[in-house]
Amino acid sequence: MVEPPYWLTNKGVDEIDVGEYDKLRKELLTIINTEETEKPRNPSKYTGREPLRLPEAWTIGTFWYSLALSSPTGLFSLFYDHIQPLLSKNGSEEIGEIMPFYWGRDVGKFVATKLADKKKYDRELQQAFAASSSDGDLSDHI
Image (tube, rainbow, N blue to C red; front, side, top):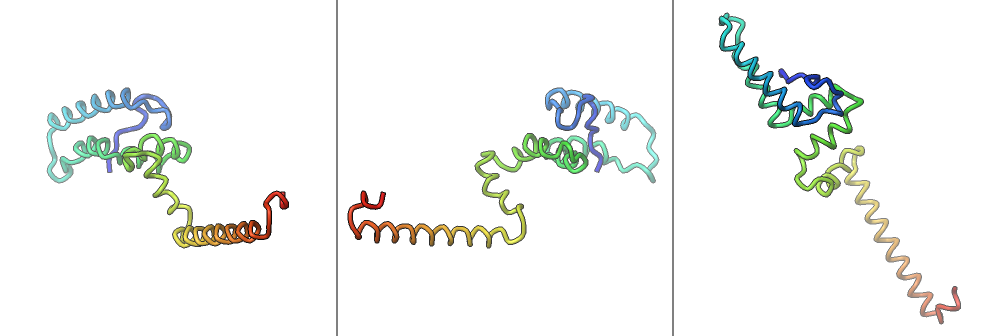
């Protein structure tokens, strides 16, 4: 897929100002569309679709996704600043429910085991205090 170049604002991928970048991106699209309409077409080579994908990549967020994949140093800031808001309307609340499943394999099983362990611990703790309080005054145990 053809993507708008990230370097339009001469900033690193994790420093892109959306407003500044979008202004230059729109200017680039106008130039590309003008050039495409004015140049003579060779039907065997021209598909006519490439410029149309540039606005789509920006609108649906694939621009940020592709940029994150191609930039290991900017991956986390791109994810938190641009990709996560596209995936989760409530930010950290929803993403906190989704992200644990990316920790490793069988995370659901791991979480279920930990919840069962916690329930067992709470039950044993309750029993220990119940037995302790039935043995006499709690001040004796302090």
